[in-house]
Image (cartoon, rainbow, N blue to C red):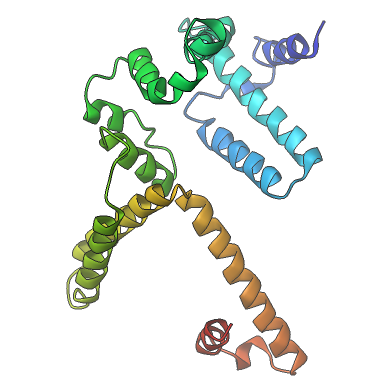
Length: 247
């Protein structure tokens, strides 16, 4: 028995009539947080270059794939083999330069066309709606904006102008209600995502890096305060902001 069959056998036992009550009680919906958490933990392991954690977390993601597929099989919807064959067919379809007669240099321009054909997407709005709603909003925004364009062409100066206009409107909204402010902040974040696309920068990762930098600087501030004999109660947010701006 190979390692994959061993995992599948274990899950079949757990989901059997005499299996684990917790596993048997799970549904696709109840497992959603687990799958999302495991995916994020894979990303953490990659970011930390921790191979041992990466191996473990990839195993957890694989478990979720098997778990969901066996649940669907028990419901008579599709089987684990259907899941595996589906991704195999997709990989062959998306690599015609390897499994067909097309040239590799022609593939980049055809990649989106291949995906649209697979999913039956006929219009730009179809393609935009095909982007998963469960994605982090910055990731989803970049993907939706990218699919909204018929070509790779665009004007980054217009993107900057639109972002500046959003920021100006936000500054002028101090006395507006929360709904208006939320709408303006949403538009500003959309423009940031748009600019990120022009730069071919992942906005989600950019924000993650900025957050880590911010936390590190607050930690430096706390350490300096402690070395100076000051307690956290003696130093406020304003002091920390002054320190961070001075770096």
